[in-house]
Amino acid sequence: MKKTIVLETDYMTLGQVLKEVDVISSGGAAKWYLAENTVFVDGELENRRGRKLYAGTMLEIPEEGTFFMVKKGEPIDETE
Image 1 (spheres, rainbow, N blue to C red):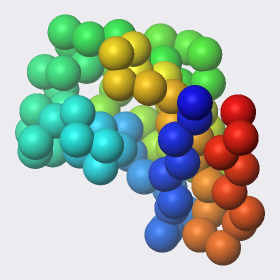
Image 2: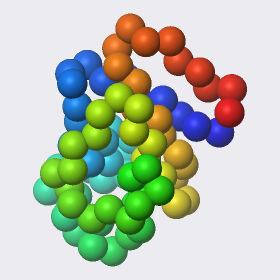
Image 3: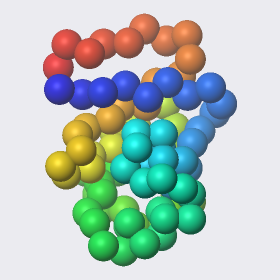
């Protein structure tokens, strides 16, 4: 099942998203987490904590789930 992250601004960084979904406890842990764990952005391996994630982006974190970025006010489809 995909989980939805609602963007209050135009984008969030990968580090902010990791903190938002409780994978890390502080932004400073993002660099370490990405060095030790696999994270995919739109199906491609990503290790940059500053990577900007916009509406329409899909984030896959093995063991945590799949997250879909949507802009505030857009309809949310969580049927998949």
